[in-house]
Length: 380
View 1 (cartoon, one colour):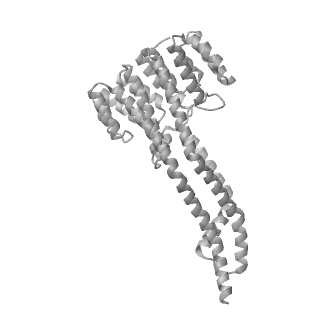
View 2 (cartoon, rainbow, N blue to C red):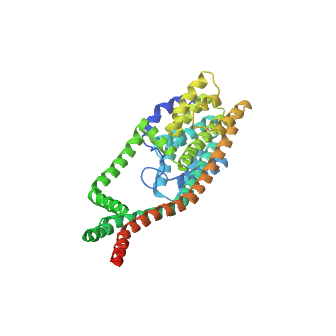
């Protein structure tokens, strides 16, 4: 069962909403449990399918071999389900879409490969995509694990002081009856507030969690949330680069497969699952239909940097747009790796210094009245 490119584009736009509801703002198509297949397993699946099909093995037999190679019982059952659908005559992309185990980015990419006769190239790129994603995650984990551990330990220590130690000091200070230094009084008032309104703090946290869930469902709020994340120093740039790399990878694949630029933009819009790119892409497509070039329309949106616009312009002029998008994809991927490492180097000492200052201020505030009392006793 096959479809031409215009039908794919139409299908993409009509099915986007239903698919998007199953994905969060972080594009979490991965889980170790439940109805998803992990990124590590997907990387392995695409790698094996690429090798098997590249060796001349039929897609049906390739899935049979793949099914026997997978160790996870749940994943084996999911692959068997797709294998059965392919044997019954469905295309691989439609079997993936119907299974709900794969993101729209994946099954639309596979569909492009089927329609253009470059399925093996798509499988190789999907394998690389997930390898890069796993690598980025490992880098983030490595960079942030120690600062996060310090954060939790410090928050626990501060909370223990606020809820247990400082109230004890407050009782001692009350017996003295002396006026407390302003910094001590501020710490004691903060402790009293936290002890009295702990339920309110818990309610605020629960509300933030509920708002986050609502943000992921509402397109307008989802766009706002993405902009908030993009505004975070360092992390926002990493977040932006990840989606720009995905955009460039998709465009490289489509343009290199001789897909018309309008169809390519429509498909990428439905693959990307990032509102701050989807909206500009929709406007860019309309302006290109009106006769403008790709780089001219891209220059109107801040999400695209000057380097990308300059290379896209050159790609259009020399008629090698696919190659330039591929170069941009590699550039953004390498940029993510570099910035992730840099973030780990910067965050760790800043976190230690910041939290050390908080603990130090609390300790000084608690012992300052005692120093003053000792001085008064000595003078007396």
